[in-house]
Image 1 (tube, rainbow, N blue to C red):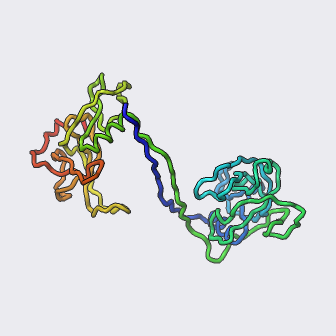
Image 2: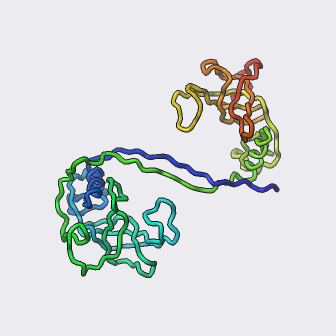
Image 3: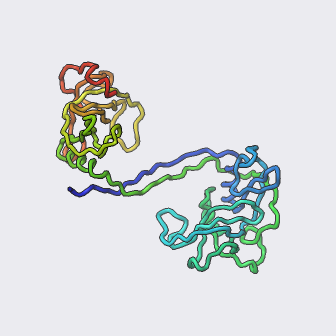
Length: 323
């Protein structure tokens, strides 16, 4: 059996969200080296703050300031930090119940090793040198010797949460959080053969031994019958447009002018449609039943787009089961 392909892939996008009054006050407070929580009607103090009581679902707006010192409730050692994590040397993930709070805050603890970490240990916030109104304004937690004394926000704290208005100059009203997933993808035996065939400008599917449906791209098994598929079938290269949409919003990093057409194309001999861009024809002339063929660019592993073949349109009955 030929080697199965695998490749490193990254899914990455910026997640933008606006902040309500509670989250705005919390993040702006971090920028000002103040940790704010919310107090529920029954007297619990929640840090990080939430807008609705998780027990009663009541709206919460009563802000209080808690101390920057606290107690580790549980922890896990991270021996190999990953990109964009709080520290680039081994550290502990900890849940810290700040003094005055009834819930715990998740963050990193800078410690020399796992033997130096335990539930119940006292810690304090190490503030970032530059703060912008984000959870990263807390650079990490560090072990705290109570003998250092109480000096307010630099490490001491107050015994009871102090009421806070939540009012700051230039409040943070929104955040952009980058989301990223790094992983290694392997398409498996069936799709490896499909991808290798595409490199030769061929479309290869697999036929179910029971229902005889040809899957392109192949899946290694028939999702209807549940049987493994191994019989390879070459399909196309011509096909029929079954359905389509007109795209009017230009995507970032995609060098295609709008409007353009993206459609489902049933290749001749295939038992289902695949996706493809349709070009070589004005967007408002694309239609169901249009006969198309792939257009390959030099060195590409897949068709750049599909263009009309000049054949008469396919009869609806020939592709209605593939819509």
